[in-house]
Length: 332
Image (cartoon, rainbow, N blue to C red):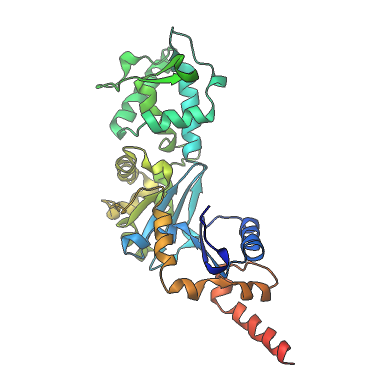
């Protein structure tokens, strides 16, 4: 598809810091043996995302499909002891959207939408076209209305929704033969799955604050002033504003009171969309001289026994010592 000769092109692969070793070894095996790439470099997405900003320090939140991952970076070094992850991504929004659609959405003619008629592709379409992240005050008003309805053993109604109410959204189904009416409150509440604490108190803002708590005290202030949010889910309208509100509100809890001096939290505005900022950093790194210094060559891969080493092992010179040992055997 690229119409390039892979034997002449070094490869840089943007990966998650939680990428399984089996996947890395398999990709390296294919690139070196099948495509005969001259060199390969696996680079963590959270590090590359800071390159387009011109900074080496930041608290990076990667919110994708399966999970949200928080990794602090200080002067280009990942503080791995403080990473946090939770299954709070697009999949959680889709599950919440399926539940809301099954109870409140309707087809034309008033027919209720069965849950089996809400596939993943439809949830994705509705989320991208119509859903948004509401303000914290409106989310609290919705929660209060739901609690009042639960105490009276009634179902929440549109009459109890805060004003102004979002307009309903109509989505054509079956090639336009039917219309699905998505209520405004569903559009507004679908993303609450990311910000409502679960039974363990885990939410997106809690992940960020827990990560800061695990960092050394002298790193917390610069990290809180350099928050970067990446990932496709972070492109939802109102995402960063709600996250900032929730972070400030959580500081009032006893668990996070020692972080109160870090407010106000400051977010970066990257020069690109949140879903490809890591790729943009990879493109920058691929054009730098450091690519040739840090990449693993095909010869080094062969001398290591066709094994992809971890990055600390590679940078501390274990491969170079293996190479020298192999050259000594050849001389003998």
